[in-house]
Image 1: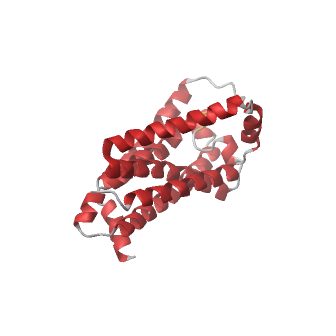
Image 2: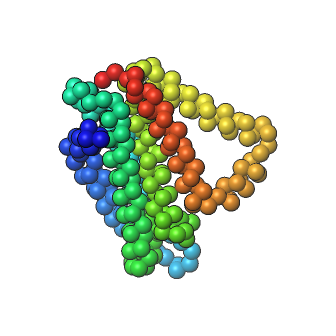
Image 3: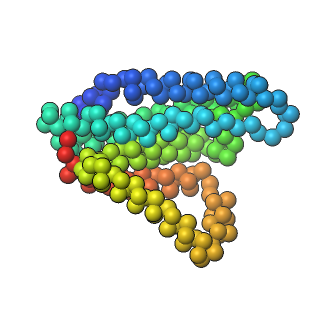
Amino acid sequence: MNRALAVARMQLLNKWIYLGIPAIILVTSTVISIAILAMIPSDGEGTRMAFSGQSVMWYFLAIGVQALTYTFPFSQALSVSRRSFYIGTLGLFALASLALGVLYWVLGLVEDATNGWGVDGNIFALPWIAESAWYTQILLYFALSMLLFMFGFWFATVYKRWRATGLVTALVGFALLLLGSVAAVSFTDSWAEVGAWFVQLTPLALAGWLLLAGVVLAAGSYGTLRRATP
């Protein structure tokens, strides 16, 4: 456990990557969105949404890559076990994802209280999500952030294990999997059923599916990391 905590502290040595850049992305994307909405006349009807508020979560994809490539070789030079590195890294970013979920929920409350930042906009309090309970909103943001982080982390472990050839193979395989899923739905003429399933999906159910996908990626990344070379 002490080793895992040491890994978490080691990850935070570069505060610019893990704290500075996310803060800049959050502030600038929010200010730009508010400025754009302020320039667009509002008729007072309907919802004016800007999805830029979620930009920090997408940055977690890049953080997942950097969390492995920047610190994994250094950790191995310090004789830190792969297990400790894995637990410390994932534990740190689980806390970061939880903090981000709480922050998004709080910003959604501020948004509601200020009439959409004074411009009748929805950046953080997106209607379908904001209608849910507070814990559901936080859980959904947490699940999405962790899933994106795990995507980046796993692809980085694939690169460390099999280098460029393995990474390209994994990306192509992922693309073929998506293409095969679309083809299967098309050949079975099941788009109506798929659409109905998405319509009935609740934020809590979506969070559950995202968490399940994150667990699968976490297991795959740990299996790959055990044989990865610094």
